[in-house]
Image (tube, rainbow, N blue to C red; front, side):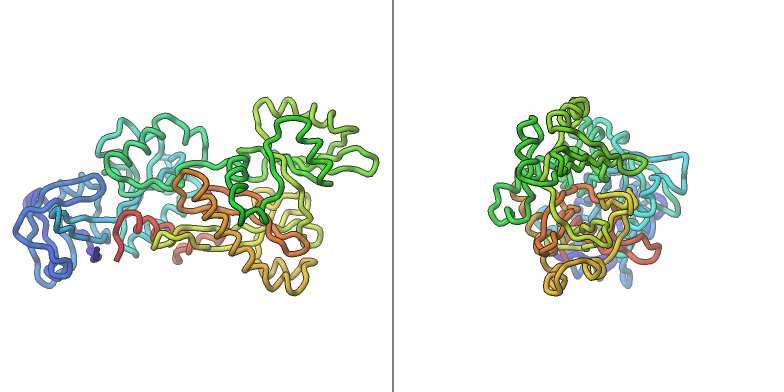
Length: 457
């Protein structure tokens, strides 16, 4: 179905009645929209019967203030319009809502805290591409109806009543918020009532990811041996097989709580644990004593036990890679970016939150012990693995994802390994924010949302 971009203009109710809109004659001809007869105007969950008046030499859409206030549409918004003859429906969109964790209404310049610039960038991208975006928090979800509160940008941020969107991007950063009954009910109900698509609808945990991917033969080569830590027997078996193992909180992020366990020449075991002040060292005479020391933590935290790998390093600092894989404008997985992350001097994990730094793949591998052939093929190997893993997640885990942050590593032979998959990748973890340029990751998110909403030009 073809679409046409239009600029929204708003008039007073004395000029246009609520059930009349004005539309450029060229738009009417292009989309074969009949004039002078009642049509259904649709914007997200908002629907109203209107009559269209054609306007010569005009490429916009004019509606009155009452309709604008009910839809949340603001003047100078650029949207796409499509027409479905079978149902006589004139549809505006795509309309996208982003569900974020919290807002700060008392801070008008930064109502979304550290992600305000990302939200502003998305508004700018929507205006350029012909889409509309709003932002809401779990606190804005009440009893599901055809409208809800949300934030829009109109020469400044403001909160208003809006229809339910065509597409919801779940950007919640807290499992506790995501698991609230009101949030779960909302995602289920808007899909059922309005056909709303929600993507990145759930967090992933490490055990779920590795268990799901183990069943895919083509991915076995990239998976380090990995199990849920349920007993001291599993710990002993893994430590017999591998000189180094990692204990990772199943639901951890930003490198928090990871413990590196290495066998020592005297038969004891050395642990390195990430902490606020750096890395905490401890030695244990036996695995039984090490496991006993974990018993307190294991009452509240489940751990994944994973094979340690001999990874490439940069002057002794471990290197790994974050691939951002997103659905594109045709609904297919595509790699948006791959960046190298080099661990900070006192850490064995590479997260930026722990003093790590970013680099291109080419620059990072050039300073490692990899062979020339392995350096030359590194990017292609990471790219292929990232795409295969994203497709594997989609086929093996019953949830809708539109973007995944996939953490990969290379061992000293150049072999690619999967470290972790994040279904809520940070918008600040690949390329820097820019006030003038729209980042590829934001553009991809918008294009996939447009595809989901059915506005395919």
